[in-house]
Amino acid sequence: MAKIKNFLDIEAKSFLGAQIIIVSFGFEGTTTYGHGADKGPEAIIEASNQVELFDEELWQETYKKVAIATMPEKKPVLKNLELAVREILKNKKLPIVLGGEHSITPFIIGEYKKAGFNDFSILQFDAHADLRDGYLGEKYSHAAAMRRCLDLDGINLVQVGIRNISNEDDELNFWEKNQTRIKTFWAKDVCEWRKIHANCAHANKKIDEIVKSLKDKVYITFDVDAFDCALMPSTGTPEPGGLDWYETLDILRAVCAKKKIIGADFVELAPIKNFHAPDFLVAKLIYKFIGYLFNK
Image 1 (cartoon, rainbow, N blue to C red):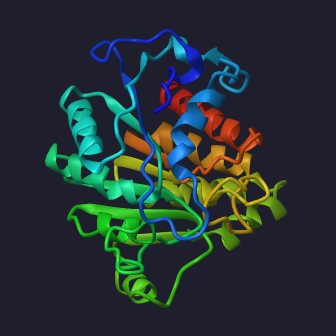
Image 2: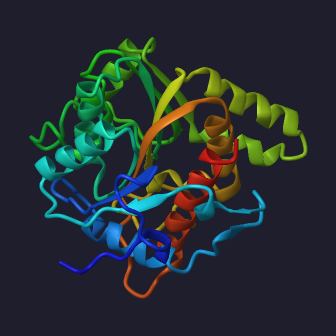
């Protein structure tokens, strides 16, 4: 296994001295179309070395405001992920997990429940609803990631960027019957913001609706196929009609400002050899996200 550098190529902080812990977990076990998500964490870390540390929007060097540690990458078996998240939460740190496929998220959420987090929202950026009750015989498929999270009590789900939901595997039926726990902001509606860019009040109203749908505590799971496939081709199941860079930042900025973020994962990057732009996009997105967390 290749040696993982520190995120952003910054000086390593000790685990106990850090506020944010980066966990690389290149698990790929249930992908069904494009492959390569197991290489995602290494590509993100490598690309992060090229991210400019001064943020021109926030007018700060975020890494100087927050202590970030990158855990050594371990063998991608789910027990190792559970143990890592358990240790991070036990020490009251905030984990950011780099996947890997989306099937890892329920195992992360399970550790939050064990740690006593009993009332929170999952904010899901994604092209796909991921609410199937299994797929191709696999209960914990990447296509069932949010369904498995909702097996747990005390969680509601807010979805942004969705443009693919199936009438198979009980997905559409489950979505229709669980509207008290699931709020979906479809990509076809979100993308209307671009048509009325001059009318910022309307866009802000939509973002306010997303924020109001969330509980006070929020876990963010970000499947990179939430982005339009022209912007993010490096993923196993790309979909046209997705989010763009600035509207994604608008949502993240608002949520981080108004809610308590308890953790996050960024999943499904399947890097394309010698095509670095998508890897860099994800690395910079994570740095922007950290900046929003520590810009209050």
